[in-house]
Amino acid sequence: MSVPLLDLKAHHEPLHKEIMAAVERTFQSQAFILGSEVGKLEERIAAYCQTKYGIGVTSGTDAILIALMALGIGPGDEVITTPYSFFATAGVIVRLGAKPVFVDIDPTTYNIDPEKIGQVVTTKTKAIIPVHLYGQCADMGPIMEVAKQHKLSIIEDAAQAIGSEYRDGRRACSMGTIGCLSFFPSKNLGCLGDGGMAVTSDPELAERMQILRVHGSKPKYYHKLIGGNFRLDTIQAAVLNVKLDYLDRWTRRRQENAIRYAGLFERSGPVRKGMVRLPVPVYRESGTSHYHIYNQFVLRVGRRDALVAYLKQHDIGAEIYYPVPFHLQECFGYLGYREGDFPESERAAKETIALPIYPELTIEQQTEVVEAVIAFYR
Ligand SMILES: *Cc1c(COP(=O)(O)O)cnc(C)c1O
Image (cartoon, rainbow, N blue to C red; front, side, top):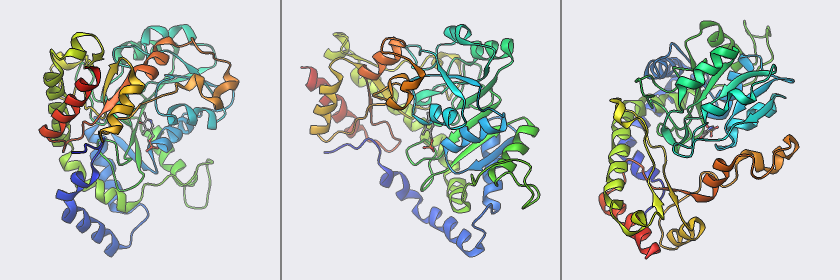
């Protein structure tokens, strides 16, 4: 039996009729650009994230881009972020002419290490972009402290962490200045293509982002700012309005799968020998139900590349998120970083592997994945 990393067909099949009805309604309305479904989704997602305003945009990447634009970040500015994330997190900083400044990760959570942020703050620093990687919030308490101390904005990259809760129950996107979400199909709440949203509780920033989303015009054809076309399609919003009702159920399934993985791996040879280490959900004991939403289930393992090849050979989906940290990417060579600058990110890039964790994963499939991993180390 093959086990994919993600099974979108199994995910969407039960909702086929409901989704198609929403698409049909949008088709009938012909309001393809910023139709009522967009506003409805913005309100619902903002509330879900414990924020006041949502601005539906073209992608998660554009959500971070528009957030930086709304904060006026550009040439001469520095933005602190992690070197271990999806490319978009750093790419958008450079696209605006600003300079990304990297800070190594905490090896347990793979999120930015707040202890190290203060050391790289300069007079040019304008913002911090913590990423809630794999679905678990970065350690926002101390990050917010540093930001407050140096008057920095915080943009939460919550592309992998919609609804994820920090230790005090505050949700991803509600702690920073602006939060950014992605509706890419592999995220916990995905649409049928690209989509994203920026959320905030600051009315001025919300308005700026609304204006930036339509080329910076308000009213139409009168341009206050230079924006772009960053609009979320009405059809995608309609689909997301259907899917949002199921999100908590899917999150629970992902958490159940994670717990089941832990049980299946427990006392197995590779775990005892230290060849496999399970993810550590650090807020599990805090009493929040969304302590980790497991967009990815990531192990730290020995002989990683051989394991990936072995699993592929046995038709088991596995992926490396991410093989090259930002500071070692060719396009960022001009920043002058070298190998060894961020040892934890470099080690994570060499030692981690993501296993299937999607909500529809069956017990049989999970057992097969675990047996294959155990067989590899035997
Ligand atoms: C997916 C992702 C993005 C980008 O979202 P897109 O919708 O693909 O543009 C940004 N940051 C992180 C951490 C992501 O996982």
